[in-house]
Length: 127
Length: 123
Image (cartoon, rainbow over all chains, first blue to last red; front, top):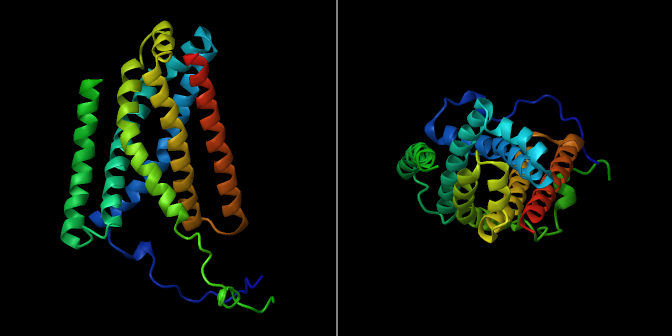
């Protein structure tokens, strides 16, 4: 293969030279929340498997999920879930080549952040 | 051959004709999850914290069981696709391939485990 060493030539500017902006931060948060949600999904699968196995193993899994630590993980995951969902909707809108101008992108960014917080609080109240 | 650049080797072959497949499968699973996730959050959220008897009785009902099963299958598929994109962005070479294969195995494994658990609870 032609993986030739082309020397350590300068690369075009990367992420590190840019100042953080709402658009870039909401974008990277989409990726972080999406990938972090695997923790909650693994916990839930474990909890379901424990429930399917028997009362004793269920008690172990349920104790962790309903402990303060489990509550914290699931609460943060709940927010991550709503954030990723709303950010996903934003991507579906962008995929239609709509809302890509800076002004709308900023408005959508604030809507995603605010919406995820509101939905998280609402969910906690309802559940 | 060894002196050809990646670009030179690709010229003339046209596109791979599957370039949008990954994007489209993420779009389809995203829309499916848009329906499933709220249903799952509220069905699972309602029953979490209940006793063993209540949980097993709850998941032997069709609606919570079907919602949970679909959410597990579609979300692990969607997760795997998203994880693959992240790895392709940040990890290159053989290590990137190892990460993608490893997470694919883990995703399907977790999905199968979840499905088994729900089937056992439901039946």
